[in-house]
Image (cartoon, rainbow, N blue to C red; front, side):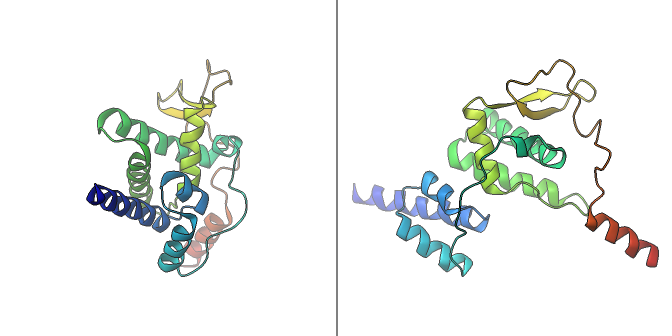
Length: 183
């Protein structure tokens, strides 16, 4: 019986390490592992070399609806739901695996950066489980995108098929254009 407890605790530490390396907030670690707060704090400081961020977690479904976060959130949720349905994993293991795959996809796009943090991804899953959000198909491309459950979806067009006027016009994009012209 004691060996099972040690193995279970070792798995909990491994999960905590994975989440900390991905940038998880302390509250997420406390929810997804059975390790004590003190143990998680020591582990966090050992891995990151600093204390974890303090303050409230970002708790709003609206963030996931804005243009760029919606595209990233939708990619993550498509991966997550695929894993749940087809890979036989769930819970925190599905979160970690889906987030790693999301990062791999984003890193494969030149000049792209991950918009979705592990903490926001965790919240997104919770919003889906609470039926506050769902994936809806775009009527133009057929892709599935994150939306509020209560929104009207009959004529939904995604942010890729119909980007907003200022989409992609960030300071970083402007700097890259200036550097390209200078070269």
